[in-house]
Length: 265
Ligand SMILES: CC(C)(COP(=O)(O)OP(=O)(O)OC[C@H]1O[C@@H](n2cnc3c(N)ncnc32)[C@H](O)[C@@H]1OP(=O)(O)O)[C@@H](O)C(=O)NCCC(=O)NCCS
Image 1 (spheres, protein in one colour):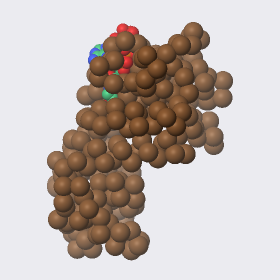
Image 2 (cartoon, rainbow, N blue to C red):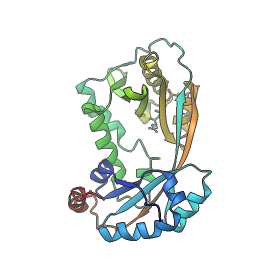
Image 3 (cartoon, protein in one colour):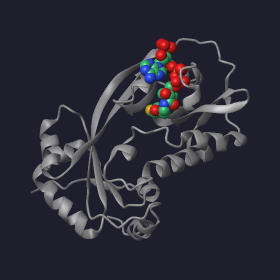
Image 4 (cartoon, helix red, strand yellow):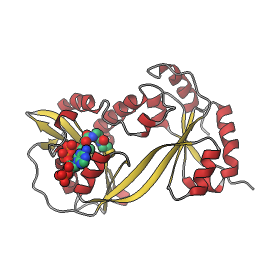
C-alpha cells in the first residue's frame, strides 16, 4: 500500500499571501512516498489549491530528487541556531519594553526589511506578498502572539525591535522577528536587543533558538557573536499547483482562499 503524503493547509500564509497554500508536513514524506508525489500534486491541483512547500535537510538526496521530479524547486535555506552562551551582559539603555505608540514605527521599519525570506524569494509568490506577510506577522506579534517585544530607541524614536515567542511545554524561547532600521544598522542595536532577550529567558529557558536564511550574513554574524551556534540546516522547496489569478494586492485570490479555508482536507 502506498504511504499517503501528509500535508496541512497553511492558514496564515494563505490569508496573508492571498493564495491557498499547503505545507507537506515532514521531509520523510518526500523520501518515503516519492512515487506518490506526482499524483498528490495532480490531486491537489484538481482540488484548486495554489501552492505547496516543504522543508528537507540537505543530506536527504532521495527526498530532494523526488521533490525535483515532482516539479518542486529549492527557494530558500533555513538555518536554526541555539544559544549556548548565557553570559551576563550590562543592560543597554537604548533598549526597553515596547509600548503601543511604537507599533507604527515597528511596522514602518519592517517594510522591505526581510528580503531574504521564502516569501520574498519564492518565484511563485504574487507581487507584494512578502510585505503583506511581514505586516500580518508583525501585527499578530504586537497584538498577543509574541510573548514580549523589545524596542531599541535613538533620540526617543523606535529604530529596532525584537519579538520573542515562549513555548512553556518545551521551555523554549524563540527570537521570532528582529529588525533594525537600515540607517541605524552597525551601531550594536541588534546585539543589544538580542542580549536583552537572552538575559530575560536565561534562567527560565532550557533552549533559546532562532531561525534565519543561510544567505542572511548580518543575522548569522549577529547571532553567532551573541553565542548562538547552528543546530539545524534545511532547504525549502516549493511549487505552484493550480495558480489562481491574483491581483497586485492579492484580493482577487482572497475569495478563493476563503472558499478553500472552509473545505478542510
Ligand atoms: C540582522 C540585523 C538585525 C543586525 O542588526 P545590527 O544592529 O546592524 O547589528 P549590530 O550592529 O548589533 O551587529 C551585531 C554583530 O553582527 C555583526 N554584523 C552585523 N551586520 C553584519 C554584516 N552585514 N556583515 C558581517 N557582520 C555583521 C557585527 O559586526 C556585530 O558583531 P561584532 O560586535 O562581533 O562586531 C539587521 O541587519 C537587520 O535588521 N536586518 C534586516 C532584518 C533581518 O534580516 N532580520 C533577521 C531575520 S532572521
